[in-house]
Amino acid sequence: MAFRFLPLVLFIFILLPFNALAQTKSTVAVGDSLSAGNGYSTWLLSPSGDFSFGFHPLDINNNDLFLLSIWYAKIPDKTIVWYANGNKPAPKGSKVQLTSDRGFVLTSPNGTDLWKSQVIDVSGVALAALNDTGNLVLQDPKFKVVWETFKDPRDSLLPTQILEKGGKLFSRTFEANFSTGRYQIFLQQDGNLVFYSVNLPSGYANENYFESGTVVSNSSSAGHLLVFDPSGDLYVLKDDNERFSLSPSGKTPSNDISTGFYLRATLNFDGVFSLYKYPKNKNSSDQKQSWIPVWSQPENICTSSLASAGSGVCGYNSICDLNDAQRPICQCPQGYSLIDPNDAYGSCKPDFTQGCEEDRRLHDFQVLINTDWPLSDYVLQRPFTEEECKQSCLEDCFCSVAIFRLGDSCWKKKLPLSNGRVDANLNNSKAFIKVKKNN
Ligand SMILES: *[C@@H]1O[C@H](CO)[C@@H](O)[C@H](O)[C@H]1NC(C)=O
Ligand SMILES: *[C@@H]1O[C@H](CO)[C@@H](O)[C@H](O)[C@H]1NC(C)=O
Ligand SMILES: *[C@@H]1O[C@H](CO)[C@@H](O)[C@H](O)[C@H]1NC(C)=O
Ligand SMILES: *[C@@H]1O[C@H](CO)[C@@H](O)[C@H](O)[C@H]1NC(C)=O
Ligand SMILES: *[C@@H]1O[C@H](CO)[C@@H](O)[C@H](O)[C@H]1NC(C)=O
Ligand SMILES: *[C@@H]1O[C@H](CO)[C@@H](O)[C@H](O)[C@H]1NC(C)=O
Image (cartoon, rainbow, N blue to C red; front, side, top):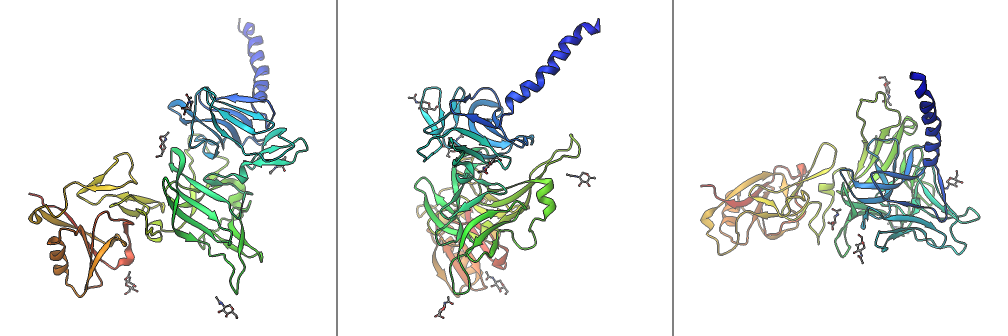
């Protein structure tokens, strides 16, 4: 009996490779299109099979919205390295088409344009190809490159990718929200590579919290490219061919990293720029692999950022501290709570009313060591004892926090507090935070 099924089995085996072949094209021609349907749909696969380009569900448990994106095809998490429409996720049924005059055009089911590649070339587009480096390239009929994702980056860089003067990286809003977020990395015209936060929605740029400092001086020349070397080194290349490596000393990846691992450098949603590695060949299938940070810049974003006209890394009245992975975590002081409970990085509000109408006898202090909000002072009293400092804040209806430091100095602060951080270099300073008395 069994052999009766043999032809069917053979049939399946013969069909499979063809099916696989149909899905694994690495170029598409003008006129081709792809629709967002159920789950992941790969349109282009790089020749090695490492990278996919197509529709990636924004939330795998809810196949309503899609990102036209490039991701690691062989990694179970399907980590995204580039996305077209972060600010306008595509509803199911949206379509991307390769056109000769506008390159890729992504349209929603009702016909509105969600995104298009900005092609500036009179000869038009002939084909699209996905390279093994993860670069998606549009070429004209003479194979000249007229647009490429490597020159239109989002939050990540890949080995062999180069950022030119004027080039930027943009963070996303949250890990799972790809709208443009608060942080940018910019290779300025003067050659300086700078990291800063912006105030949304206007985009006003706060002070840099990291700089390469690669500008012209008497003894040095300016930077002109940010280079991600295939070996894994990431550096600003200067006009005199000297390099400013972004990796903090001692953490330069060695060559074995570039062979055995995928590498990517990502501006995380919280402003930390990290180089990650992921083993290409997993040892056993049941072993859960993950992206491992090789280094991060800045080394402490809580203490290196100071926004004179913004909230800082965390929202107002919140406190920034580093976790073991060198990433910021934000916490409300006791007696305060998040305004938006779903935004752990957002602002905190006091759980009690403060102000000059309130009875000061109802108030007490919570004490935090080495915590400060550096820019919210309205008065400095010196010399003052610790007791005088507390008493003065208690009797002052403007005072929400008093910082006692250096043995004789008392800074009184008013709401909203900004740039809150834990900083071990504060030498056991005390923050007295006014809270409602427990009774
Ligand atoms: C079309 O769909 C987009 C994306 O879902 C939506 O933002 C837009 O409001 C819709 N436009 C019309 C005219 O219905
Ligand atoms: C992409 O790969 C093709 C084929 O190897 C190559 O000709 C082309 O130069 C590559 N393009 C870019 C921009 O890397
Ligand atoms: C992502 O964040 C933006 C900005 O906060 C918000 O407007 C948008 O609705 C969020 N998108 C999703 C899919 O949650
Ligand atoms: C650069 O050199 C000039 C002339 O020698 C000198 O006057 C100037 O102070 C130097 N600037 C710096 C930043 O060293
Ligand atoms: C796989 O396991 C071997 C032996 O335990 C180890 O030497 C090797 O580094 C592992 N490879 C990866 C990619 O983790
Ligand atoms: C902390 O104390 C050390 C040693 O006395 C001093 O060098 C440093 O400047 C102090 N830090 C601050 C922020 O005052």
